[in-house]
Amino acid sequence: MSRRQPLKILFLTSSYPRNAHDVASVFLRYFAEALAGRGNEVHVLAPADGYSESKQEGNINVHRFQYFPLRWQKLAYGSGIMSNLSRSPLLWLQVPFYILSMTYRLLRLMRQEKFDLLHAHWIVPQGLIGVLAKSIHQISLVTTAHGADAFALKGWLNKFIKRLVVAKSDAWTTNTPATASAIDDGTSARSVRVIPMGVDIARFANGDRAALRAFLAEENFLLLFVGRLVEKKGFPDLIKACALLKDWGVSFRCEIVGSGPLAATLEHSIADLGLEKLVRLRSQMPQQELGNHYLNAMIFALPCVVAANGDRDILPNVVKEAMAVGVPVITTRLGGIEELVAHEETGLLVPPGDIEALAESLKRLLTDAKLRRRLANQARRVIEERFNLQVSFIPLGKLLGEMVEERAGQRVQNQETRV
Image 1 (cartoon, one colour):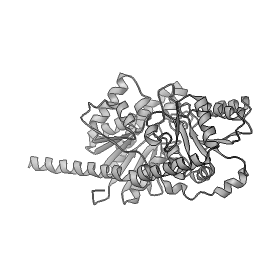
Image 2 (cartoon, helix red, strand yellow):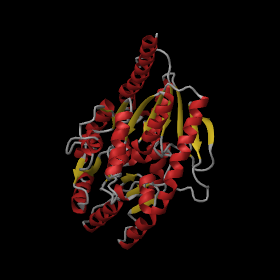
Image 3 (cartoon, rainbow, N blue to C red):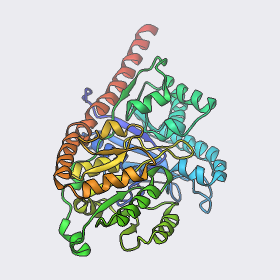
Image 4 (tube, rainbow, N blue to C red):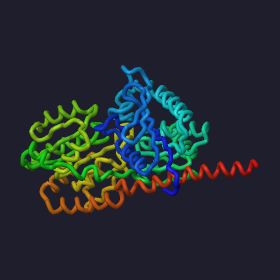
C-alpha cells in the first residue's frame, strides 16, 4: 500500500463465513485475511445467523448483528438474500429491520472504534448504509458491487439508489465491466475501477487426491459441480445433459456439491431420469475436502442461467478455483464469465439453457484428453496472472490506502483554510 501506517478498516457485508468450514462469500474472508496479513486491522460487520456477537476469528474482528426474532430470521445466508427473497416474498418484511439493525450496529461500532475507512460490499443495502455513516462521521467510503446488486434489483427507485451510492462513495469498484455498465451508463462523475476478487490458489494446492480416490475407486470420475443449489446455477440443465450422455453411452460420474432450496427438486429429477448411479448430490463441504474433489475432477461444469428475478453469476468463484487447480471448465456465455473463460482457450462456453450443446461439450472433453490438458494448463496460467488473490489484492489494497490519504489531505486543507 502507499500508506506507511497500517489501516483500520471495517467491511460492511450481507454475507460472511459463519465458521471455518462455511463458504458463504468466502472470497471476502480471503481478502480480509490478505489485508490483515499486511499489518492492517480488519473488522467485518455482517448479519448473524443467530444472536448478535463480536469475536476474533483468526486475525479478523467479526461483528454480527441480529435483525429479527431468531425463529423467523431467514433473510441472510442459505441461498443468499436475493434468492431468499425470490423464494419467499414474505421475507421482504424483514428487509427494513435488517437495514435498521445494521445501521444501528454500525453507528455504535463507529463510536467505539476509530476506523480509517469503510468498505461496503454490495451497493444495496451496505453501500447505502455506508453513505449514511459517511455523512455523519466524515469517513472514507469505498463501495464494491459484486453482481447480484447490479442485475437483480431493478426499477427506477433501485436505479436511483445505486447511482446515489456510486456518486457519494469516495471510490467504487466492480468485478467486471459488465457489472459496472449494469449500474452506471458512464454519466456518473465517479469513475469505476474494475478489480476482480482473486482466488487463494494455495488453499487448493495441497489437496489429497488419494484419499478421495480410495472412496471412488477407479471409475470414470468426475463431472464436478460446486455451488449453491439455486436457479441461476443451472442445475436442471446439467442433470438433463447427464441424461443425454447416458443415452449416448458415454461413461461418466457426476457429483453436485452444495446446498440450497432446489435440493429436493434435483433429487427427484435425478430419480425420474434414472441417473441415481451416475449423478450424486453432496452437501456443502469444507474447503479442504472440496480441494480433494477438484483434484479428482475430469471436468468442472457450471451451466449458469439468468434467474427469473434477473440475478446471475458474474465471475463465479468456484470456476476460478477449478481453473486454479487445473480442471478444464465448461460454463455459459453469460455476464462477465466470458472475461474469465475464453472459448477453446481456457475452457468451453455454451449458450445458457442449451442442454444439447452442454452435453456435446461434456462428451467432447470426456473423450479428448489432449484438449482437457491444453485447456487446463492455459486456464491455470490465467488465474495465476490475473485472478490470483496475491495479484488482485494489490490494486484494491492500494485503492483503500489512497482513499484514506485523500481524506487526511482534505482534513489538513480544511484546517489551513479555517486558520
